[in-house]
Image (cartoon, rainbow, N blue to C red):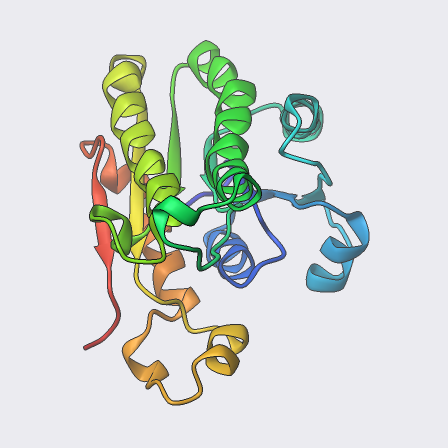
Length: 234
């Protein structure tokens, strides 16, 4: 499970899961390229950059933003071994027939367009280098439609289908593409939004990050196109 001398890109790095993933990979010796919208936010979350940690602020809704972080990774570390597509978001919605263009576009942009831009920027370099690992973040709820979550489950369902398609396309290139499917993640925001719920039944960010580390490791080299449920401790 060692990632010594390997370069791991984490998008959505400032979020709860992004921070947990960054720590988990750092604990295994990885060089980190941390991607989020603003350098100030990255500095607030992680402190100063270091020899093994590079901040790469980027707007992933623009292809140029993704191209920029990929080039930054190659310039500093000369390689890209792992891409963790964590950038994304959740929003409850209306009934499907009442869904606004704004809500639909927001959820597809933040969950699928960011992923598309990231893999466009990174996969060609992985192919040239002879391999790599990509880990996406879907949602356990997206395995079927849910009332008032039509746009969200459609977007995260698209992430699942993109993962499966990429896995089929890239396995012969020695690139593994897999996806985690968490239930509710235990964050301060979720605790505030659902004060009567039992967060002990939710998924701790560190536990989800550990699954992502496994999927990005050589221990998972035979795993392609998996959608791994991560549903908490009970």
